[in-house]
Figure (cartoon, rainbow, N blue to C red):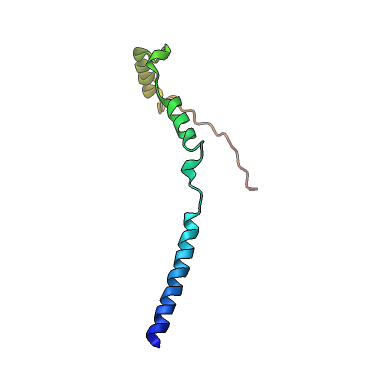
Length: 92
């Protein structure tokens, strides 16, 4: 009798697990959406260079000069003004 009850419980448990797992299978597949992945493809297209577009690009010599000037003057202590921008009065 105990073996029969154990088999019956096992069958019910298997049936319950099967029903729960079949519920997961009924979810719609998002890859079937016609717009799936379009935003990614659009962003890749916007960020991909098109050599045939006739764009001017970046002048290498000018870019180098701008970068060298930027590096020379950024953080120059002579250029930093020691001015108090905010005055906080706590009462005394």
